[in-house]
Image (cartoon, rainbow, N blue to C red; front, top):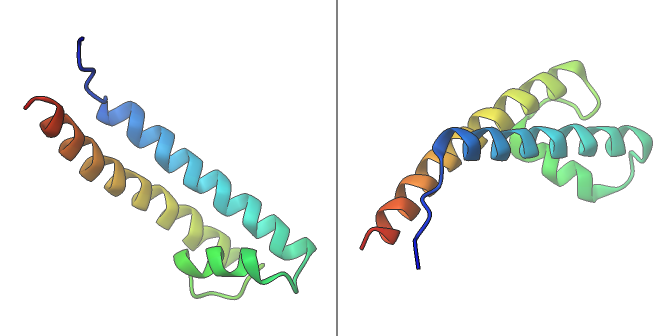
Length: 85
């Protein structure tokens, strides 16, 4: 059976895009349901600004994208090295 390597660029775009989408969705939920603590916890991971502020949205999108690419780089590197053994 052939072992398939992960493509860093595809995985990086997929993971960072997913994290950005989740952050924006949680920001929307926090604005609609401000008393619901679940979305606030996720938003607090990426920004220290007030929930619902433009600064929080900006910080969160940038941090989600960078965090996605960093995680993808680490994960793809480790995975591809493990499957070559």
